[in-house]
Amino acid sequence: MAARRRSHGARTYAAAGVNRKQTSRALAALLGQVRRRPPGQGVHPVQLKGHYAGLVRVGRETLAITTDTVGTKTLVAEALGRWTEVGVDTVAINVNDLAAVGARPIGLVDVISCRRADPEAFAALGRGIDQGLRQSRCLLLGGETAIVPELLQGMDVGGTAIGFFPPGRRPVTGSRIRAGDVIVGLRANGLHSNGFTLARRIVRDAGADWRRPRPGSRRPLGIEFLTPTRIYVAASEGLADVPGVTGFAHISGGGVRNLPRLSEKVRFVLDGWPRPSGLFEWLGRTGSVEPDELYQTFNMGIGFVAIVRSGSLHRSLAWLRRAGYADARVVGRVARGRGVALPHLGLEYSGYA
Image 1 (cartoon, rainbow, N blue to C red):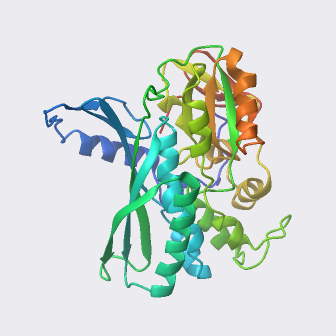
Image 2: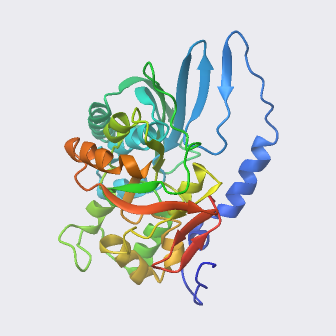
């Protein structure tokens, strides 16, 4: 079964300026020119094709490293003059990728590129970064600020995070996922930090006002957009040592197509994933975005998943609820085959893109 045929004139991420296929080809071209040269002296990379974090063995220890930026969400922050939420995102987008391999965050190095350094904006960013660090029990190890007026009109904010695996813990890579496993989803706070190029285009073309609520909401649209990325470190910490937990996924750019990053040998059947509602439903309806595009661009309400053996399901759900993830729910199952399917919507994706 293929994804539903897109109606004429339907809006896509590619038309908004983000072409996934072109990006994939460009990345393949870049990586094709990089030769792997292990530094030796007890340092060895761990091969995890297309995963959330890079792993490297240093002596007896394994370290996890990831990097990401907040992207064009910063344009909404600039329009509203609010930067604290983006500071939280700077931490969240990186520690969540560490959490997706079961790594415990150690520290973050931030990077800010901008036209000019605004002390008030930087102070707000700092407050947000501090909030994110406290939530994830992570340290700020340093950072870099680049003032590039000829390169940028606004501000680009991101970071690099490093994590480790406590004694006795192995990386949770998804290699043990098998048919019969259960997919548990944790609620997202909203858009998080993905799909903003398309979402902003929808707002612009609809003539919507950032400072006014959309129909069906009491909060200003801009505040909805800026809601910080939820941090899932505690969920990963509590489940990473449970033998029946076989995989984690951070549902970031690519939506449900993130799941095949864990394993290309199984089929992820998402028969309990939320239908479009709230902000996602508004974006789809207002922007004439078809469901197949929505589910491969936005998280659609689930920001992180844990994949567990059926025998470990009740224990995992109970722990998540005690740890503050009372919204944890079964959103699907693992079956034989390949790719991702949302049978209640008639959607199917061949893999990550």
